Length: 328
Image 1: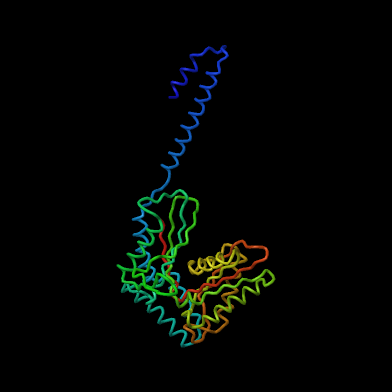
Image 2: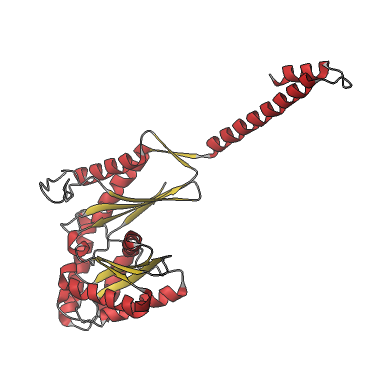
């Protein structure tokens, strides 16, 4: 087509006042632009990394079992460190039992806790990833279904919250939090969330005048209300800023972080240490029997917020701060 247009343009003499020639030249330019765009689109599509829904389902199924049966190494180390720091004989004995329980669960491939929770999945989807073979969320749900069924994990999800409350029978649907990020990788983190600690979540809509003292009050309020019900020593996730739902999601992400991670902002990293000291000063101790170690860690995540708002959310994990991660 381009060569035909070029021949027609050349056919007309240069000195002729020829609107046809100009029109044909215009068409040729348009054709070149279209071909270029299609070529670029094709190259872009070729550069995208394809991940099948079956790969996603298999990865999620494996994570579901691993997260429920294999306490992460950083949490195991945190329990060992807590045993050294705890001065209460009862607290020391409890921490030793928690370590033994984690070791038995790993050795026998058995759940660390009978409450294997709702499957909360955090997904960071690279913008250069193309999901093929089905839809993304269905692939995650299928992975949870396989993991909880084939791994003989307790199914804890009811289809509707208020009236019938009928168990779905396979622990689906999963709770999915997805965001688009640069790159061609798909990062999935599965954090089973049991009700004992989840029920102790707290959200307060503060105002800027409440300041950092208000944040301290909310965190202590949540921890004291949780007491032994959250199976301490706990991991406390704190979300600050955003809107109501963003603060809650920040707290959830914070609670699911690796135990030894620190906030990248030095100010918030210092706040994490301060809040940990405050929480441990409550004396609640391991399993609520008193002691020095009420929490293994406090993690803080934050988000931009309205000039008139200071939302603060608290989400608590029990001592079994379970999570597993895979990158596809």
